[in-house]
Image (cartoon, rainbow, N blue to C red; front, top):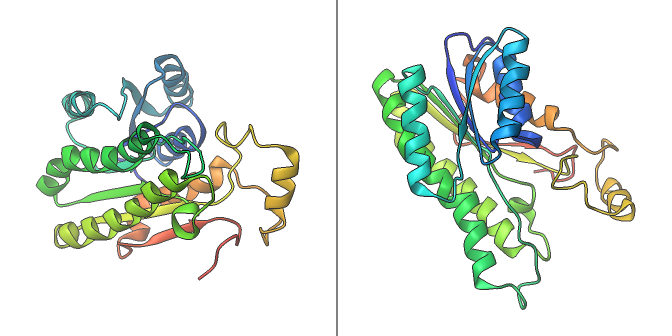
Length: 247
């Protein structure tokens, strides 16, 4: 699954799943533009990539800010000349029962997790259309497929990404551009590290493979969808959940 000669942009690339995706794409031969809010963590990830002979660059970006998205993509295009692969990974949670959820928390999650993905696609699509090749990969969630109490905003944003994925796949398929989603289940990241041991053990009971997933598990799926091996896969949601949700 060589990605030699390809340029990838990964949002939320400073830690967790986003960082793992950036490292895996670089390992597969892609030049990677890593984007996130934390410049220090981004620089560390870039150093890890370049230290093993890969190519990458850091771009400070808060995807909640449309102007920053435009500026970061413009800078990446200026530096690398094109963007072949977009991984929309940046996301946040603001968990609360719906009866107590503040409108600001609803808006923040929908804007960061869903609207920002649309804005990033809009900024990179011109480069992909020009070269008639592209891979768009949106990071959804098992909870966008099955819901989760206390996460109405998060589940709605991730379900929205699935609809966005299918719509974009239909729009740009004729130009040899695919658009797919990856739906992680319970993955060991900073976002899940705060869960109690009791919560984790209860979650494991619903995972047939009997283990919590790793960011690398998700990154492997992303690398596949970004490659030529997945050239006939589009509008698809690839579940990486250990069997937590089937069908």
